[in-house]
Length: 144
Image (cartoon, rainbow, N blue to C red; front, side, top):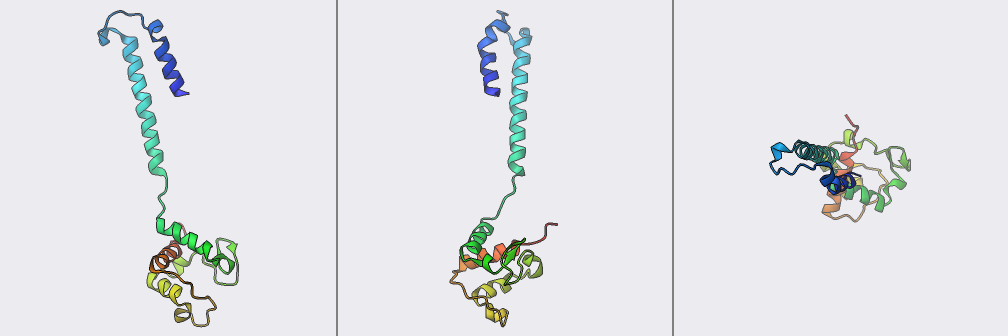
């Protein structure tokens, strides 16, 4: 809508301001409309920057970890915020319960070594995937 108003304003400008003088100080209609145009443009630019910086940033490792969680079917046993199975422990706030990164890394490498009696299988994860899933687990915290 705004570009249409600007184009129509430029189209009808010769009919609006018929002053033949070229000095901008002696053409108040042109000067006021130019200042208003700049105010609108910079206001909209400021609003867009404010909205751009208001978008929450998500760590790519969290996204990759969430994808691995889905890819390996972890939701079949574990529940996160009410979604998933109830066979394994609820992981909704596991980042608060177990904030130790090394514990999670070891648990994903060999679940039996840190949780004897656990029936969680070992998954074929490389180091990057282990770190991504661990970052996802550590990100599951209560919002404070």
